[in-house]
Image (cartoon, rainbow, N blue to C red; front, side):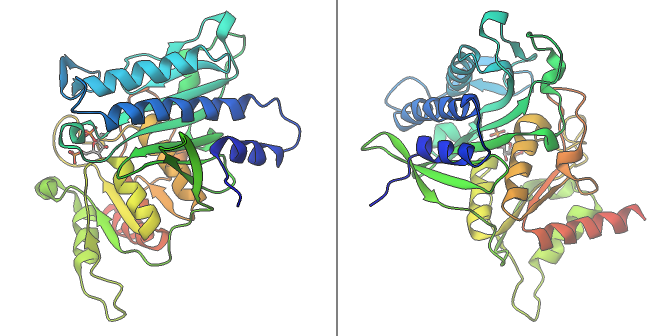
Amino acid sequence: MTLTTIERHIIQEERKLGPTTGTFTNLLYDIAVAAKVISREVRRAGLNDIIGGTGDVNVQGESVQKLDVYSNELLIGMLSRSGRVCAVGSEELPRPVIVPEKWAGKYVVNIDPLDGSSNIGVNASIGSIFSILPKKSDGKIAQDTDCLQAGSQQLGAGYVMYGSSTVLVYSTGHGVYGFTLDPTVGEFVLSHNQIRFPDRCKYYSINEGYSAYWDAPTRDFIAWAKSVDKQGRRPLSHRYIGALVADFHRNLIDGGVFLYPRDSREPQHTNGKLRLLVEANPIAFLAEQAGGTATTGTERILDVVPSDLHQRVPLVVGNRAEVATYQEFARKAAA
Ligand code: FDP
């Protein structure tokens, strides 16, 4: 019996690229270790004093949860002292953490340390998201702008979902792989080899509560998703957990489209809600690697050129054919 642990898998994948220094392998492994620690805290939530808010508000104007702070500090601590990373952009911090010269490595990592924080207090699924980029600026010390790269520049991306089990899904541009944490041995073990969106799209995921604020392409798409077709492909079923990682993961495994479109709520949501660098880009990278698509409606997510660490972007991601239908509605609305 062969057990493929995440460490072994990452090394095997890196070997396919020829001789390497192993730095990238170790970086992914650092993230996996941090994920195990966060998973432990999540599993003990309720027993330890980690549920609830800190009383602070983050740069997004959202109330900061204790688990957000814990995950953010843990990931930043692990990445910035590894010698492999020169800058870390985090959803929780106004500016990137620039690693001092003696620790500075060649990779940049953007993170959403704890996604779906509104689910923490009710024991529903939450996640961590990461995006790995090359250092772009000259010199040993990174610049803030190193974090501001288009998603097409990503060398790897992934997420950890703390759900009924803890699952780590990642891609380095050669397919998507999923690992389940075996709590009895403390290892992430390969459980989902070469993940692809199934041909059949079963679900659509959107916060229907905001339908009064939707624009025409979203209204048209959701009406289409609910309509009956003769081949029996529609209506799609509706599922929405309210944590991007969990909603995306379900759609990736079972087939589906996730939407957080722009809407008319001023001022935050006129460009959607989700963050380009720490949410949309890594999720779009995984979606494309799994045979799906991710768009703003009019532009490929991975081509959006960022201008701000906390830039928001409309996101429609999932099965290729159904996302194309959304794009068609967007084209019609613009004509
Ligand atoms: P949360 O605010 O709970 O952290 O980006 C954050 C996010 O969750 C996503 O994970 C989720 O998909 C979305 O926001 C949910 O937003 P709504 O509550 O507006 O539907």
